[in-house]
Length: 51
Length: 248
Length: 226
Image (tube, rainbow over all chains, first blue to last red; front, side, top):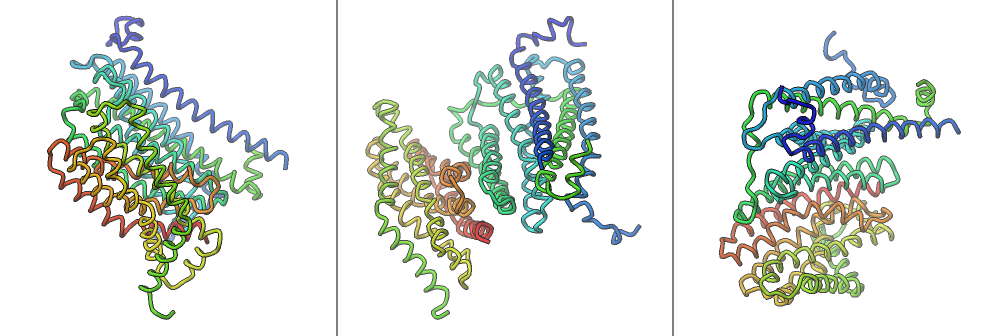
């Protein structure tokens, strides 16, 4: 185990901003991509129900 | 059964690829999730602290996979676009179009995480070295591809024009990389010298490879999901598509 | 077809040049844009001579890129709208050669002029005689490439709404190597380093471009028109 406490883990040796800024934005991007795709699919289904 | 008897192009019809993609995508997504879990666990809890960079080197577990995928996806996109252009295969063109947004996002992540890694290690958010500059141009190429496709109303013309652009771009990227590298070596005094990636402890390498595989599986999964939506969008008026939309 | 391909290509070049002459306003507009943009930078960054001498090459090159972009849209669009392009596609002249001819005419009415005017701009930035020569030589080698690569972009966006801006978006990233070596040549001269490599690479890119770009643009034209 590298970390002695949760606080240590989040601090990342003082580099927390950079490490979590990286992983955080990546997580947002992935989530965003999946949500956008789901919305696009839903729009398709909705549009079709009018025809 | 003999190879010649297999209809290799069975799945080249969008109508038949749609359900296949629907069956494959969840497996790739699950694989991506598991690989990411394993990779992140190793990356955070097994891999030791780096001697020179401290904890910040852990960005590598996102940065390198994203950068690799940004290039792999572009090559795949250019490949399928070329197939679509040369063989007039609609599905291939759709696959290329489905890959583009994912590739662009990977490129963005690579640039973003690179900047966040660069600031504490080199002291700068951005440097004009060959890799970063080429990666930035790659992002512009993705955006150009998607913009060109969106600007042309006729779908087939859009597919084929964008394919030409993708291919020209693919030829260009090595040239751009080389020229920027040359440009940097000439300005050696002014440029920031990059520290190489930390010499890899096995655990670090394992973590990075797992994350790379996770990124690969993720990109395939999302591309399959997106191409399904694209297929239905284009074939909307066909009976099979109406049925596919009706069933969840 | 009487006369063969040579005279046919010459006719294409002549026609385009004649059109450019008649549309003098467009030609000069791009030229003035070039001069104005290059003249604005010192106003923006301050008149300190050392700074201007360092950035002169880069600014003039980027201004040349942008100015070339302005005139690219009309490379195929006018012909597209009046039917000449279809005639060109139907004629027995190989399309890549026709594209090359049009590109040559385009260069003569844009890039070549920009290159010839560049020494005046070099004066504004206080570039030395050698540096100015390097700027001129680089632009003479590089602007044909701008026309060639630009032709691909123009062919891809012919007849597309909002094509002008889109064209810039598509083509500017592809210009990066030309920019690097063109401006780099001036840098090298100013730093007293060997400059031959830059010219060689520009020349090599030009040679490759002369072969590949018309062919790619021809493919793009067929996609656009058929």
